[in-house]
Length: 640
Image (cartoon, rainbow, N blue to C red):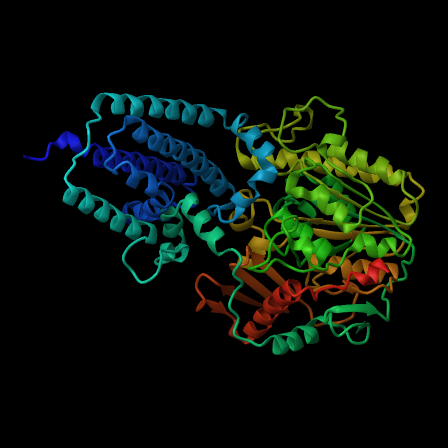
């Protein structure tokens, strides 16, 4: 009896699903290429063709990892339409997940010029934000995907009802079919028959640009999450690494180590500034880009007149760097005073389980009141819970801030009302105090103005114009805050520290014209210290970063309570300074004087400036080991 082709329904159905899944991944790759065409503009036609072709390998691995079991089950010789439909339901749901995930990855890549990695682990804490985007700015995409998935359910069930035929009962045929499918799936989820499973680094075999076109967000997230807890393998002993770091961090004539069990915890024995009992106001400027600040970049955009006025009366740090490329990393650097290195979790997701320097608690021990306000939603980056963990007695977010103007709706907050709310909260504090505000209106996306009356440039729908208008708005908010603060009694005894959290993605940084080196284009940010009663205005090229904020505040306020930090006071006379910069822990940079050392962990052989390699590796190893072994800071110092 010959084998009836209708009895191969399971194989046909599996083939159709694989084709549909590959089609949506290929469409997503094409959409990525179109939406980020400036990133891929240097590719030739051959590069594009082979990137699309080789990208199928990464697509197949992602597809079969999630769908393989269901593709196998529909080929089990059960004479049941219901069994087939149940497996198709799961496959359709996975298709829905892939569609939304790939769409989000395209948007993410357009902004950050990289695919998702471990970001999906944070989705549950930002669900409301993603829903606001899906049913707001990207409603058309959402509706299209939903309509397609409805069609997929309809036609898959219709095909099953019409074309399903009892499977072949030949035992040998069924065993051979299931065996071959199982082998094919194993090969697929490994990415081929090579010795090791396909990895993200395999996409970059020829260049980063072609590699990004080959990859997809499902694959990169899958691989990143699988490996996220593994620290970088550094071939240097901890004792040797610690000695190197201590020699470069501890200022011997100004500080002493107070407990050998916590080798970077020290207290000051000499102070460079007499600012005892002064107040501290820290303002973290969301995505403020130096390229568009006239007083820093020598340009004439005219969108930061209030910040430019402050620059004339402040200490301006021309070589100040963000230690990471995300807001949560900025908060970690500012309040924990160490950078992110591979293997660590993020603040808000387990990092608090280890002893940390908590500046608000240290200052509270010395009689300081405090408040934390952010313009973004309370749940963003779990920052309000983070603030309370740090020791802030009060913490507020977008939901707590009443609006004065009728704005175009955005997912983030509004700096005019936010800074006014912040000022009112400061006025309720006892002196001395530390107060922190995180601006938000200059957060992505930048495509539209939020307040027409504050539109500096005619809106044309581009990111640059949108960003300039939002920066103009935020600068106006900052100016109103400073001018009102000048009328308060506490103003003359207050040190204002202003710096960005990171660069503005998509409107500067790598594509910007102001900073020339790679490290500068990725990490350099504006930073000033403003306090006319204490400091004369000046511009300095002193190498510095967000890690220096805690040591600087300790120095200014003459605080003798111990603290831990990878930074140094900005007023220290110590000439030996460095900054450690991290791109998700995969690419790290070390700047020491005029030298830049780079370590790309996706390509371990790629090291620039090998003379400083040991210092870079030692820093990374010490930070990871001290944190993971809970030897960064002894909490008893502030609890007793």
